[in-house]
Amino acid sequence: MKRFFIEPSETIKEFPVIKGPEAHHIAGVFRLKPGDHILLVDGTGVEYEAEIAACAKNHVQVSIVRQCLPATEAPVKITVAQGYLKDKKMDMLVRHLTELGIHCWIPVVTEFSVPNPERKKTDARRERWEQIAREAVKQSGRTLVPEILPPIHFSEALDTAESSHAKIIFFENETDPFTQTVAGITRTPLDIFVFLGPEGGFSNEEITAAAACGFLSVSLGPRILRAETASIAACTLIQHLFGDM
Ligand code: SAM
Image (cartoon, rainbow, N blue to C red):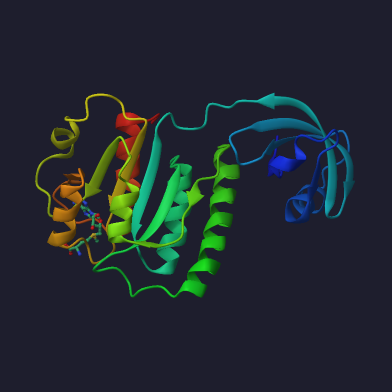
């Protein structure tokens, strides 16, 4: 069955309605008809099987058949703080890290990241990233849309990580093997704050400041990975060690 988004506020009604682009996808693109069954995600962690009751171009009325609880959300909440990369790379990272099951994504301005993004531009980019995340949730069978926060500065990211059960910063000049460094995390953390650098990498001062805030500095091996490769590798490793991969 095809999956579509529905606003959470609609799912409590007797005959929920899907409007706008999702309705157009149902009626116009997939040409589904009354009586057809579809899956609906509201982005808050719930999925429904529904039957189409009425179908118009931008307006589809459904009746909920049953609530499903697919096991597609990771048991650990992974927050990724990403040193600001060039736009296209950020778009690609939102898609791939959503598929990998992260819970929250924060663009971070660091000492060596791309020049400080202007406020109005980042608002538009953030809306685009939220749309990319929603599409990736639909495609990957997830039910929870990762939270995309507005850009913050490095020091604010350290503060944001304060309450996390585990804090890991991936540093290209780290030499201790990853498994040795994280061996110190004995209990499976409920939430992990993961920090990755921009194309220019982290400064030594940033790594020192992170260590002072309880971050473990870890290596992804002896090769210098591109920033976007490192983020995908890091989240895969974290999901393998503490999550559901
Ligand atoms: N400018 C740095 C240099 O030339 O040494 C490279 C930075 S790398 C392109 C971008 C980010 O990816 C790094 O800040 C780090 O977070 C991560 N990264 C890349 N390779 C890594 C490795 N071998 N170990 C740990 N992190 C790595």
